[in-house]
Picture (cartoon, each protein chain N blue to C red):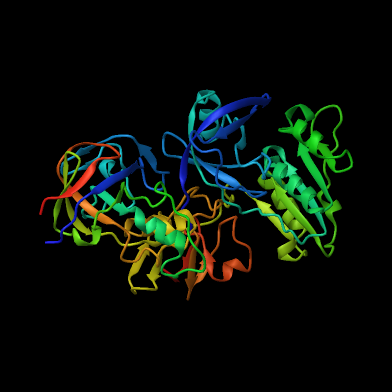
Length: 316
Length: 163
């Protein structure tokens, strides 16, 4: 569990990057430096209605004087991006957490294959800059509907060579779709980083299923779709006290813990941000998050979406 | 009765809700029986707000910050630089024997406070700041007080014993 400081940051610049994407620059009103950001990190933005949205930082990770976030307006989304597009102007205050990183760059890699889809391109600004600084060769496969719809394209044209930046389009006069199978079998020292729509993430995950887990990295900002999952009630045993908490079928483990006075930090409630991570023992956990890797799942779970068969003991 | 004099209020900080960065004030309004206007424990949005406890206003001794920076006593591997905006208590003071004021009344400017209980260090603060503060703050994590007489306070106000 990690709590994070929430800051009231001032919007100092807004760029209409594409017809549906705005890039917001945020500064602290009193301090020259914000909490350090590392390549691949994201922040939570708290909206006035209490909802929380995650956005990757898309500025230079070595410049902590500002944070930059790119937001695509989703007319049929949950409302967060619409609010940001329609209400935020220069001088507005946004409530933003210190960064968290579920998508860090492995400094020991020999080569990086970056795969981005649509607005999933945003963490790759910092990953490209960090990869170059570390001297790790990379290719960036940027999948978009059309070049006109490609967020932050101008930034990548500045920070990548034409050989490094590979733009793949699925619509328009020149349709040139990325063939995920070109990733091929695993290569020692090569790491894959993928962020984008679930379909792209699933395709890369399938293609790279024989790759070593530590060489394949995903950043997901949407809940895993699993229409056939049927939640069942189960018990949580608290390791420190032996107390047993019943989790009903229609509530999450996190909700049951909150109802019983456990002040566990949480944010997305979608299994994508990593805020509510809990250690566990003695139980069969049904992992439904998009954050924890296979090895981490041996003793950690995300109670906002993950459940257990019959019972689980949490290290609380 | 312990004899002391010359205590001084150095900084006032509040946060609107749990986990929010503390904001420094140049003056603050204290409401008897409630808290500092705008603070999370006045608003009922603090981490421990649902738990019955005296937490209307919290005080912290600036000498503790100096001690942490000297790593005195050496309870962690290195000195810790903690600013008055980071310890998350409301009032940073100098020259006030906080650990002796449980159950005692004292004045901060025109306001009268009563010491409730000593504040415990918490893992929440460690997580929020990413600093190993739990052990070094043991027995010197501040004093939780109730407000007997409200009013306006500002940095520089004198702090004096009443009991």
